[in-house]
Length: 115
Image (cartoon, rainbow, N blue to C red; front, side, top):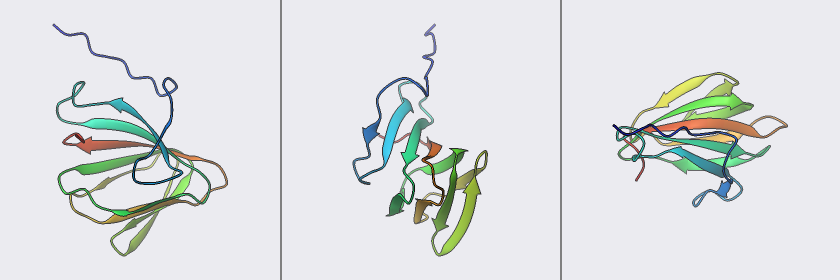
């Protein structure tokens, strides 16, 4: 029996996101930990933006750890704050911007996992 790996939000180094300059992330769980999902923590600075994009094969679930954001789903803006969670359907174009004065931190869950 394999012992599950414990992921620590406070451990590890922040890495700049490959597609979104100024956005930082840490991979917490990968397909090696869970063949059905991957989990990342993402940090968005004040006024920072994750530009419009879509995931052709993954449902993305976003949980706001701390901060407030505007999540644009196609043409609709949704205000999110600490403790709220939302599932973004496969293929739906979306973007996010930090609306607060402090860094926004969120967890992203991708099902199936990002590869």
